Structures are given as C-alpha cells and as structure tokens.
Length: 67
Image 1: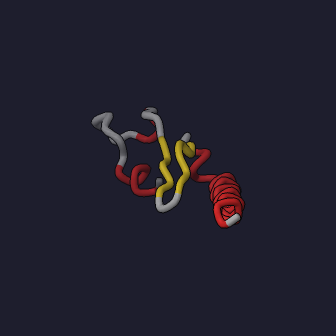
Image 2 (image 1 turned 90 degrees about the vertical axis):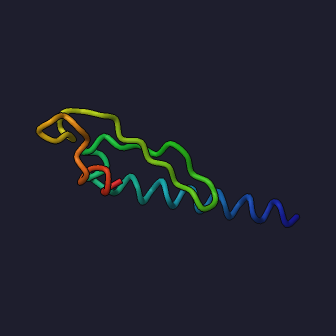
C-alpha cells in the first residue's frame, strides 16, 4: 500500500515538472527537452545549433546555464 502511495506522488511530481517545463518559453527557443525525471534528478538536453553558439562555434554558456 505504501508503494502505491509513493508511486502516485511520483507521478504527480513528474507531471508538475513537465507542465512547468512546458510553460518556459526559453526552453522551447533553446530547443531544450526533458530527457529524464526521477527523484532528485531532472535531465535536460539541448542540441547544438548555431543559434546557441558563440562566435567560435562553441556552446554559449548562457544557454547551458539556462538549462
């Protein structure tokens, strides 16, 4: 019974994280996406694109720190 309660709580938390992320327009502009959500971890992926690079083609720290 306890496991079910925690499972429901985890699903609620995951849904809340997904909804919050979806409301962040900057993440869409950066091309960022949620990769993994679990207790104490949310992994976000941002693919390399010229729009998120420095003049020397390296990732821009602003994009990295945003995610």
